[in-house]
Length: 335
Image (cartoon, rainbow, N blue to C red; front, side, top):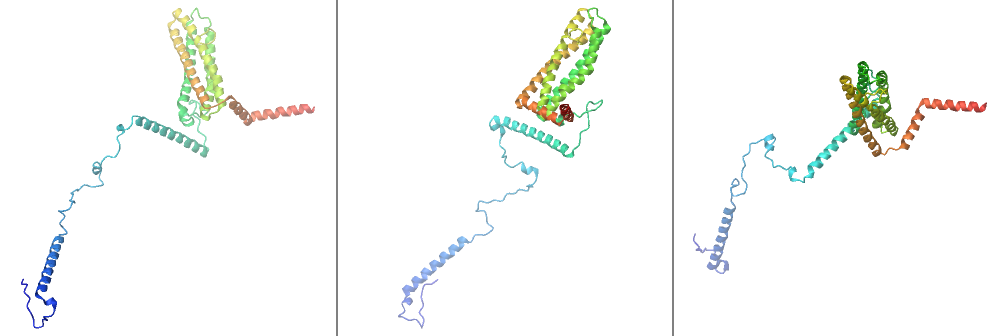
């Protein structure tokens, strides 16, 4: 490219921009600026599909994000329980146990509420041979007391078994005719009577009251149990002694039979004596456990007395007797 400036017929010699030195300087500066613009455009002209210079790269992954296998590659965020404090597992187990107990209580309350709302009376189921009442420890007794009531029921069943063993031992002694046992007929008659009378008395005097006591948390029922079950414990050890003419196949009769070499009735008397002693120890343990619960629940004698008054007030027999007594008193006063 030539920098020579040709003069034209219309050039004005007096125009300073037509001076050759000035014109050449302007042309050279214009060329430099055009060259810099071309270089800038070349630097900025980058293809849009060229990502090699960037930090991004394509990842080929054909896995299903919703499949079970894909979840196994996720980083585990659950903390390691073994790395926590050693008391964590024990506390967690205690909380779960409390949750289970609360759930059981809630189910019991819901079942009782449904029974109350439906006003349906359960079908009698006890005794199985001739049902006259309804007994169900699981549905009627609170969960925390079901084990104790079940053991009290087993105590009553053991008492029945003991009375039967006592009767059969006395019956065998009667048929054996040992010379040193002169009270065999009396013992057999008393044992037969106790088999029927003490079965009913023990059920209605101490088992049924303690069943109602744990079910309703009623102080009066607890006092019934303490009184009559206390007599029951004394009677148990009294029969275990085996005093003649008392109907008890106990230790005294046991020693007499083995001394006379009556092995058969002696073995049956030994079993009867073990039953008496076992039931007495079990009765003491359950009596103490029930008494501890009675004290821990805050029951008092005054509470039991007030409950007795309220029961007497609701009883139609007591009300009728009181009305008749008042009427008779008023009539005798008028006369």
